[in-house]
Length: 83
Image 1 (spheres, rainbow, N blue to C red):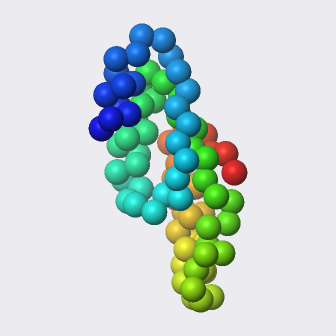
Image 2: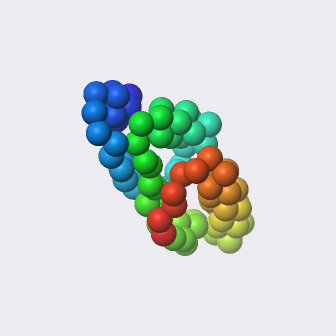
């Protein structure tokens, strides 16, 4: 809410950089991204291999698959990913 409020008050187009592992719901992030992208650009900086922090192989694989799905969704929604 804070960032979307700031973005709505800016007259000039800006680029927002967000650093995140995207551990929340992708739908919530897409709603946020849509609000920001109405007037600005949005780039997401995320760790390249967050699954390395997993406690076991099964958890790492689930995390890997989730990250890859989220990256595909975000790319389709024109969110620039920086790794």
